[in-house]
Length: 265
Image 1 (cartoon, rainbow, N blue to C red):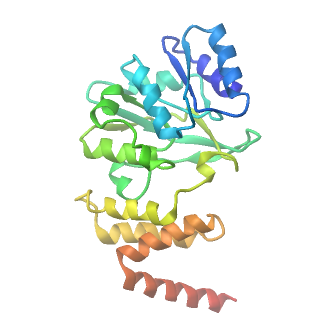
Image 2 (image 1 turned 30 degrees about the vertical axis):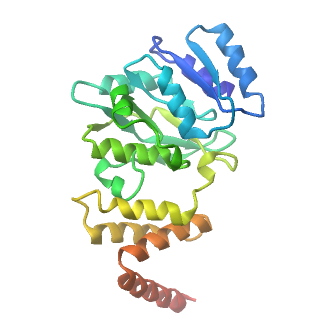
Image 3 (image 1 turned 180 degrees about the vertical axis):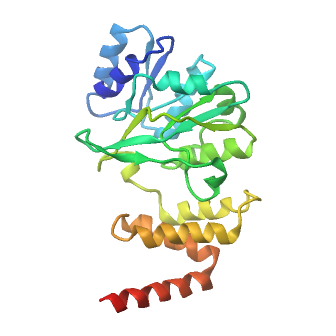
């Protein structure tokens, strides 16, 4: 956690406030936060009365934020020193949300590659905004913040509602964020597959420009390339979505793929 906080304090843009929401942590997070807050007046620490999970805590932090521009990060991710500047420079007139590719690191901090984002029109398929972002506070206020019922995909739901509300998105060209993956992170868990893929399936009805067959092709392509990489629950999610989009075609393609695999054995 100290590394994450220090990366924020090391920003080239120094006029900011850092709001740390402690969701009844059981480790040393609160003590670390209080230490930094005692050393830097830009830091404010808030502790929830009980464990309320991420979307609720995000709403708490936003409710006391005074800046026009908002971003948030987790306690094990790292911001490059120019993170704030890169996003603020891109938040020109007419732009409401900025986002960009980000570096993926492991528990030890070793770089594992760059995760690429995509056009917000593809939110109908997946969360393509990623971990490196900034937005105007009016976005949060207009769409009533993060939905507490969408725990573990609260950010995905937030971007979907922001896009459908007509807010403008702009991708930055710089990689200025390091996203850490490890077994203990929230990202290593997944919501109940049925609930998650039902949510994404229902999105098709909200995106009038998304073609059913394009959505099917993207999801099944991801599924066929994911064997051996994704967890069982993630594979189940992809299978469920593809099947719901076009059951007959999915079964036909799955059978064809199975035959080809058997021939290679």
